[in-house]
Image 1 (cartoon, helix red, strand yellow):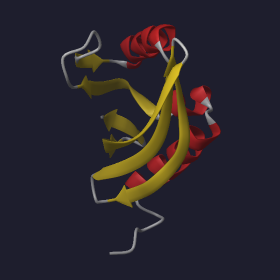
Image 2: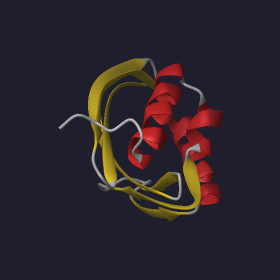
Image 3: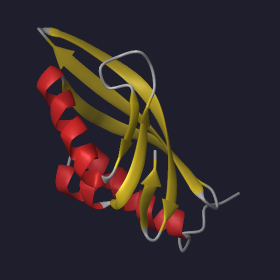
Length: 117
């Protein structure tokens, strides 16, 4: 299926993916709904559910204090009717060590914004 460039999911996630690649935090944050919900999985200090853009900004700040995280590239952008998936190559640096990894993020879109990750 070819993504519909007029779909709301595409209209939100295509510029968001470009902001990720450009490492433009203002444009990245602007893509999120004020009441966005973000789920961080695992057993780490960030695991859990974050509700609201203000709380999300605080988590992003805490992550930056722990690790230098940079999106190296957007590998792929998958568009559905209600959800989109962004696959990114990230580089994480801390204490002189670095690792690159591919990560997959699923985004629910509505009201012209990212509602849930």
